[in-house]
Image 1 (cartoon, rainbow, N blue to C red):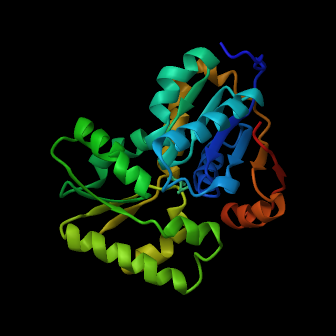
Image 2: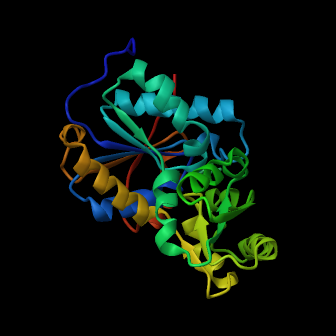
Length: 281
Ligand code: DGL
């Protein structure tokens, strides 16, 4: 068990990302499950995570999970593919038993891969993700487990998260980097018929990616998939569900400047928000 005492009363659902990307997941979760309270934590001061080592992503993610548990969350969603790829399994297997075996941490990769069967016809799947997610081969492993006949072609897009974190996504400079990675994917796998945005930041570039991707190819954002999967999970886990408070409130935390976070978050969520700064001990 954790040496700190974790609150046992119902608390918000924790949603964690390295920065703004997880807001694309939170937006869909709130739309699907508006009755719950949410506590969003963006580690903007240390974003991007995409090029960081396994050890560092694990260490940062564990810090965040611990913090969210201490704030009363019984369930934390890693709304970040990089953290899901590099930290989720270790946290679930090694850390949760000590922190609190009744709390849960869920990721975004498995629920996304589960949907591929109904999306693809050719079985040729494309994946845009961070370098870290691609190198971890987490998507490859999940696809091999669930759909052994499918072929997955991954392309790392190291410039996309920095563009988004620096509010450059809607400016013309972003086009160059989007087109470059889209062309790379099509060149590697001309028969791909479904492309996953395997980084929660990327839906912010959705229109630009859609513009350069041939129109016959499906482009899949994860938000609604994760939201449906969470709704189903809560139905199947009534004990945990009663530990999720229901006042329809969201709170936003960032490790960087709260004003900047609030401005950007309002843009992504389509809603005015207030953010608070936190620091990890
Ligand atoms: N939004 C994250 C993801 O889904 C992480 C991006 C980053 O920090 O590099 O992978």
